[in-house]
Length: 294
Image 1 (tube, rainbow, N blue to C red):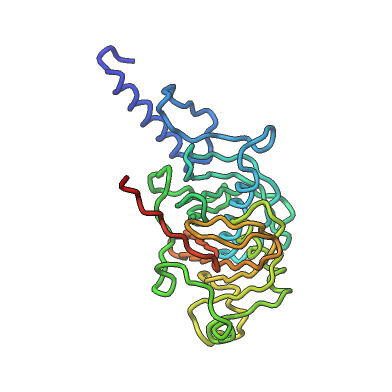
Image 2: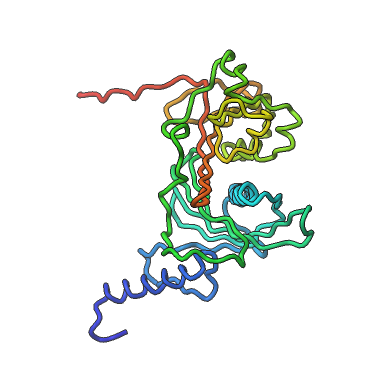
């Protein structure tokens, strides 16, 4: 340290040096990078998934699968998660995750390949996040400066902008120009549908009862092509969730109660960003209690 440097200058120099080194791997490889020894400093927290325990194991596993889901949709592959290797995360309640994992595509090569997946949460306690990176480790690293927590999202067209839709009426669901009702064999074959539900409740054993997909495009032939749409509203009826916790909403309690959830997927093919948002339908709203003047 130079004798002419103030403590604040030393701190900011260490801060810049740390994030410069983190930026070299887009936040995925922190080995041999020292965190500045300042109690106020918030860098990435590294976790080894192979040799020791780590926090949020179910959620991180699901985020890794989301990244492979995004990669498969863009590349036409079928990579399946084998195991987590490590991940780094911001120490925030709304966090960003930088995940390294092993996966293989049975149709291409039984050998495992290393993937890197980045997920940025947008809101706490709800399904709202963007997967901005999902790639093979040896693919080109992005040239843009790294932002530790990304606040952007996939660019949606007019149909997928704005608030999430409510659950449609029975008559609307029967409109084959607007919706495609999946056969049971189809939602079982497309495991991303159950994954969307698990992202909302990682503990319950959920039973899917009905699935419909809306893409904003009428007269799709064959109708099941909507399953391959990059952007879609997915309507899922299910049971098995004993209690639903949702902001300012009250739901009936019980695992046998039929629940309804809407999940919006927007995959921007230009940027590669994929945003998932979701909500529960069918609850009763609660009003904020007025403040007492007494």
